[in-house]
Structure formats: C-alpha cells, structure tokens
Image 1 (cartoon, rainbow, N blue to C red):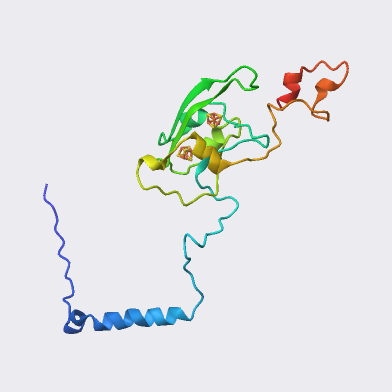
Image 2: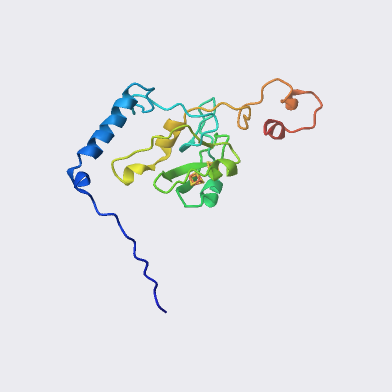
Length: 191
Ligand code: SF4
Ligand code: SF4
C-alpha cells in the first residue's frame, strides 16, 4: 500500500512579519477598542456565574427537611453510572431507625463523573441530585473523590413532598387514623 503525500506550500514570513510590531499594534488596537465596550469577562471566583434552572452541576446527596439522610444504599446509582464514578458500601442501620439501610461509604469520583444525570434519574429515594455546583476543584486526585460527609454538606437539605419515613400526621394522606379504615399505616405513609 502506497501512502499519498500532499505538500502544503506555506507562505514564508516577510520582513515585517519577522519584526512582530505590526502584529503587536494590531493586538493593542483590539484591546483599546474592547476597553470601551461592555465587559464580557468575569472576576472569578469573586464573581460567580448565575446558572440556569435546569443546569446540571455536580451530583450531591441530600437530606430531607427533618435532617434525615435520604440515601438507603440501594446502589442503583452506582450500577447505572456509565464511568463508574460512584462507590458505595451499604450497612444495616440500628433498630429504631425507620430505615433499614444506609451507606457506610459513598464516594463520588469527580475526575470520572461526566455529569450525565443518570444517578439522579435512577434514584428511587430522590437522594442524589444534580446541584448547581460547577466549580469542582482539588489540589490532588484524592481530593477530587468526594466522600459521604462532603456530599451531604454540599447537598444540604432538599424539601420535597415525599416523606416516606415520617410519623403519620393527620390529614388527607394519613388514612390510618380514620376509624374502620383497612389501609395499614405503613402503606398509607409510603406515598
Ligand atoms: S452524573 Fe453520571 S457520571 Fe456523574 S455520578 Fe451521576 S451517573 Fe455517574
Ligand atoms: S443515592 Fe439513591 S440510588 Fe444511590 S444508593 Fe442512595 S438511594 Fe440508591
């Protein structure tokens, strides 16, 4: 097999090109013209970009409005994550907890994450969310692996209407308090 070689004729630099002054003055001209126009740059990190509502930033873990961590260590997010950025070790929780399982370890490797949002889609507990955090930095590879406390710290509290593990309260959702009702409390509280 023969390889075709295509020769490209490059223009040789002229004397003026080699002086560099025309290019320097041309560049300064652009700078001066820009000085009187509206600024398009930002002084990051003092100034921050306001992201749009649907922006998908770093995935984080969230607690409910009672401060309860929502993750039950089902590992669905770990399973669906295309670049295998999530690592979970589950554990049984103590008696008295309304939840049986939670993560002992929940690591998220932000060097691997591609911000696809599949973890959020897969989570049955609404425990992991794509936050608005876009400045994800670290001074070493290890610091780019975010552990459970860090993910909960960034995620904070996210209020939603699903209070699966809360005590039943009086109201239209809580049919277990209605006399003669055959719906078990656990069923009533789970939707
Ligand atoms: S956003 Fe995508 S790549 Fe990142 S942790 Fe979630 S599933 Fe994995
Ligand atoms: S974040 Fe959601 S999907 Fe992932 S382990 Fe926890 S409960 Fe399961």
